[in-house]
Image (cartoon, rainbow, N blue to C red; front, side, top):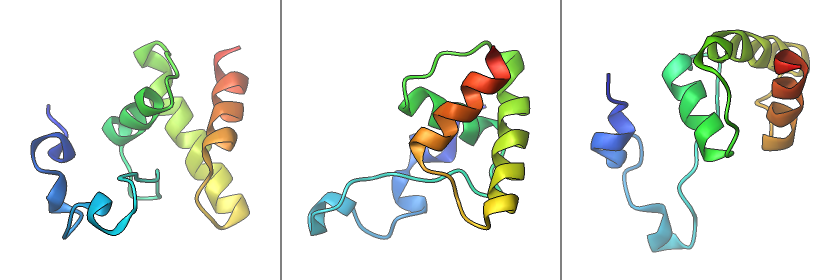
Length: 85
């Protein structure tokens, strides 16, 4: 399966972010699935066995619910360390 962002990134962005001085990025949200989680891990240069993607996603969603916000990159790194060790 191919992530739609890899086919056409403007599906979710109406303009190229760099045109206004921003960079393209996305957060893992409550609606995110395992492919989005895997893309985020790849973006963060976190190499994990595929068996860990779903548990990481569930832990991220639980932490987001507890904090009532999306997680930053360091918080995702911390959760990955806890799950994979």
